[in-house]
Length: 238
Image 1 (cartoon, rainbow, N blue to C red):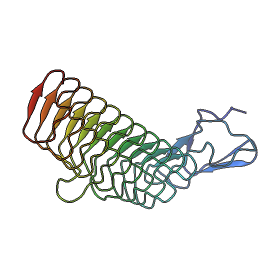
Image 2 (image 1 turned 90 degrees about the vertical axis):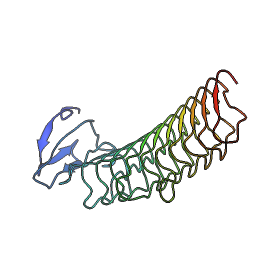
Image 3 (image 1 turned 30 degrees about the vertical axis):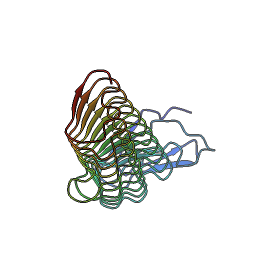
Image 4 (image 1 turned 120 degrees about the horizontal axis):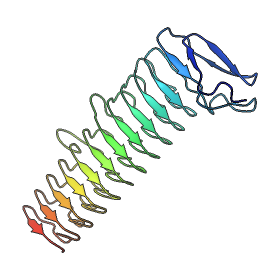
């Protein structure tokens, strides 16, 4: 009936909502709040926050349902962080966000499919904001993707491969697989880059056709659009 919304309960308290839905906490270190009213016809997965000893918070069907020792994770959405076991300090918001992550930590994924395929371990430190941003990333780390499908195909590899990339703008660095240390600010910048590294492109469609070229710097809309080599510096429109 809504009377429990906003109420905070101490750990170990069982709460029954509308006579049939039960929220329970069995640890001794966590408190939790009812954030939405459930009716007798709601599934227990529909609106429950389930805390545990590690300070994890999960809301949504299958979210964080594999966690073992992972701590301080927040998951909101269907299958968000559903495979996470020992990974910690992750934030996943959106359907399938960080769905396959098991042990990676210190990552933020916001958007449907953001960082969905990440399977790397250790201090990954990726940030993905947008629909399928870094969606196929497996082992790449320390990447920042802001916008729809930014760095979508980045998979990572050995050494610096697939690491230290920054993409801001829809489809920026879309096809990048193992290229590293690239910066693309603007929609479609470095969109077709696959293995090129240490490129900087600022302005819509800048360096859009570069595939393997390295150490290029371009500034301006369409700047360096047809550049495919390395070591170029271009300023201005086209």
